[in-house]
Image (tube, rainbow, N blue to C red):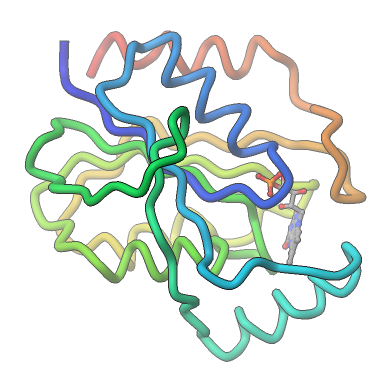
Length: 172
Ligand SMILES: Cc1cc2nc3c(=O)[nH]c(=O)nc-3n(C[C@H](O)[C@H](O)[C@H](O)COP(=O)(O)O)c2cc1C
């Protein structure tokens, strides 16, 4: 079985939920959470506004990578993995700024990347942006899943969509 790295950013838990389902079903080699060194604070609306400013200015926050289960800080050598699944919430029609920082840190040429996004109904151009940021990578099994439109944790897309997506990994 191909060695899978699952890496994700998740502010309110939706993307984390999908990442962990994938990791557990597939028996991922490593599951890594992207955290911003400076946490987002304030109300949901304030964070949405801050996110807009950050996306529009191309801001890339300082991040750290932590083991998704143990919480300890980790460093990653992407050569240790055959496939890399990267999950992000949709922020202003693209991936979250923390994921932008992450993508900038590595050379993606020749790698197999599986991008997935959670969103509230406006998917935007996340997948096209992944393609641009992961120059030379093969993007496979792209996936998006909808949660409610008010930033909550209610899953709108059926669970079967996630199960079908995870099952499709058997062909990689
Ligand atoms: C700053 C910010 C911007 C957002 N922009 C969008 C958007 O452009 N389209 C959309 O459908 N949802 C948008 N959302 C909603 C999130 O994508 C959605 O709630 C997602 O599932 C959250 O994932 P998380 O729980 O992993 O953080 C935005 C949320 C935030 C905080």
